[in-house]
Length: 529
Image 1 (cartoon, helix red, strand yellow):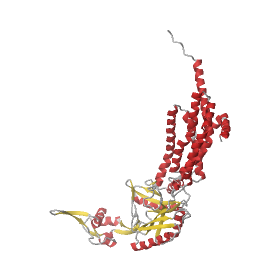
Image 2 (cartoon, helix red, strand yellow):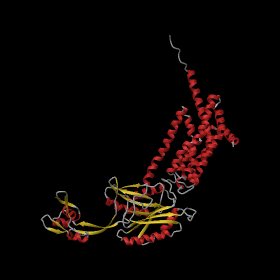
Image 3 (cartoon, helix red, strand yellow):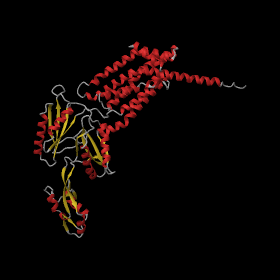
Image 4 (spheres, helix red, strand yellow):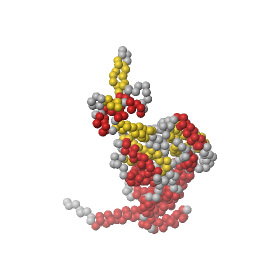
């Protein structure tokens, strides 16, 4: 290997300008490859655990919900990939209620009773339960890194509409969900209204109220007196005090019949039946209303189809929202992991840039030079191309874990250049060698330690790239990006770095010669006595 390397190295040193253009070309290739990658937040893991939510009508009785929940649990437990199953009613976390239930599904280990991924098991269970009347089953895989899912926990991702008028959100939220259901990239699209409760809206006929001399304030006051907790007095005893609360329907459960029995006082003192001024309209209302910084929020929850990344989904949602022409008072934005993904996308380029600047400053201080750090950092484009190529070949998303691998590569791949340049500078300054002799000797002497350290790093990352154990999908991008970056960087920088070193050394030499020529052409005048 050393003999073959020496032969190619000599050719590289005879054509230093051609070889020194390699980093510039690799930068352009890196930009081109980045447009072909899939983008995501964190890799989805196959932990062998699934979280399920069952949702029925808000008016369902407890006994009927128990029967439907058992039907769903029996179908899930009968799947050959399911090892154990836990079932509960009432919902958990942010949303709860008698119309909701939870399933905790543990799958058999891969190769030990299960031969398909968790995503395929989820799709199979969803197909089996899709036609059950009166109940829906929503599934999502359990991940080691959580906390970024929807507030309700019904799916893996969510998108939110936020505004000051909740009625507008209720009007536009289902429309957005309907548009997303038309796109094959999204599955299990649901909203807060899908399991909403039945609401009875009291609509006031303002014309009749004005003709009878009944104000809106009088109607509001009568309703609050009947159903609210208006305190009208306080009774004081020797030891205690008792607040007297007005209630017009004591001992009864208020209902529609109670409304028709109420009367409202008109301006002339007459009592007018409330039913003469109002009408009842049935509607649907969410069981809970989410808020974000005091503003109401309407969530659309969904999963992504197999093979669809978050980088593909975000532009689709934004384009759908743009085409709908929503009012300006409504703000559409990602929530949970989608919001984190957008923040990561906006900050990862700055992260890599600041890492490179920090390395450059440290190297500049160590070498007391502005040129040699550039030579060392010229190894980074090759590492970037290798990492992106490896991710493209293995169909790996550029996620937070991949960015961590790229930042690690910044620190690892430059060690090849440091080992060569350190030796060459010492040979020039102390050994009196010319730049081409110094860099050639440095490359040949340092070839063995460079190859050994690179092989150690590659073999160390190999188990990560192969992916051993449960949840290894989280670690795989780290190993894949590191191995790809190290292989390409090792193959190219052994020739481009010495060529670039020689180009900069000759440039510095010509600059010193020009300065010396200018000083000899314009000697300093002798001082007058």
